Image 1 (cartoon, helix red, strand yellow):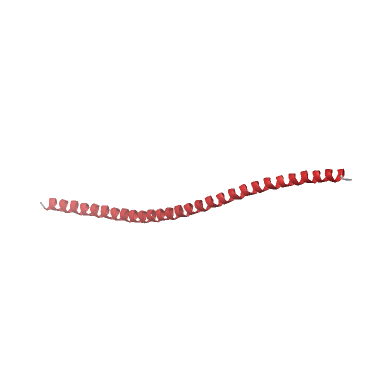
Image 2: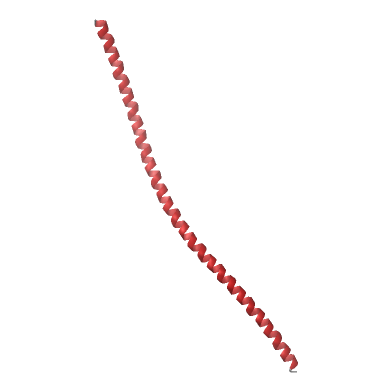
Length: 104
């Protein structure tokens, strides 16, 4: 009977050792989970901040592009009007030259 008691005690010791090892592995895994959850939270916050920054940048770019397009339109209209003025001035000059020549 004492042999059975010794075997039972040995099994019990091994069982306790295995349970302790499992608990240690679980605790290590829990630490990794907590660490990765913290990292995940930090990354999500970084993504949120970067997304906000990107949205503001896109908004600013859109306004600047619209302003540039308005400048382009104004420049084109002004250049076209200026060319018409030059053409009209040339026509006026030619008419004046002809009138001046005919008055001599």
